[in-house]
Image (tube, rainbow, N blue to C red; front, side, top):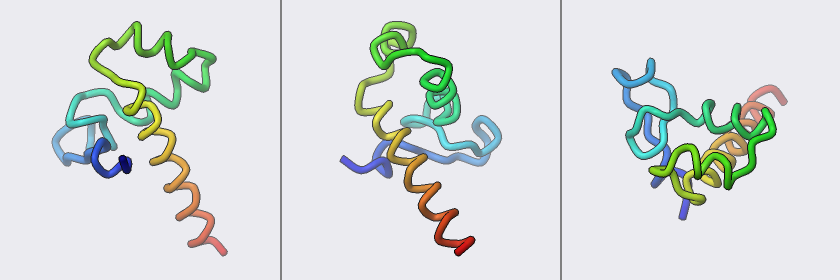
Length: 74
């Protein structure tokens, strides 16, 4: 599954930030939880409406965005 099936961007939701499956939790939220040391299991326990695939989609999205930024600056 590609992150395009999971990550949505809606101008009126969370300021147009990339969200997970149209919900109000953003890619940034998930990345921030991971960066703060939370495990995937802890995130899934705290947010039972998320799936492991959602978390992986956030990581894929971030990696793709980073790859695009590097390509543009090169």
